[in-house]
Length: 116
Image (cartoon, rainbow, N blue to C red; front, side, top):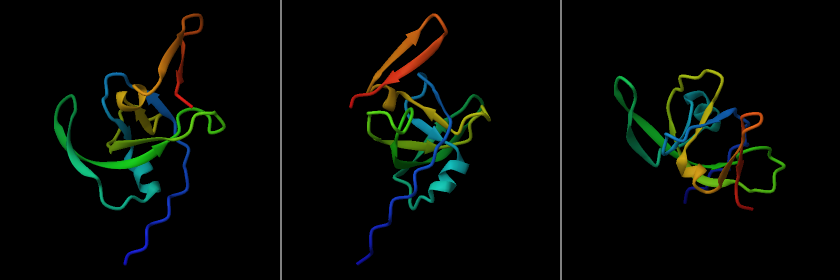
């Protein structure tokens, strides 16, 4: 009988909220650091000029500081390159729908409040 794989060591990435994306996305670099086995499935991913096939994996995601009271969120992510080189992760509606997005109009910042 095969032994279960150990969970990978958590890694910290810089993400951006995208209310137009259904699924969250991680870059191929992040996926390589997590050393995934087989994808859950392969999905077509539509871009501005083309459609490509992309692997989908199951992950546990923390949003915000690791010392926050909310625990990890079980979700799936698609692996694809992001146009914005400053970020390694795009947080889509599948994660956003589990919490509340609060806008501070004074300084144009947002807080994502997730359930405990």
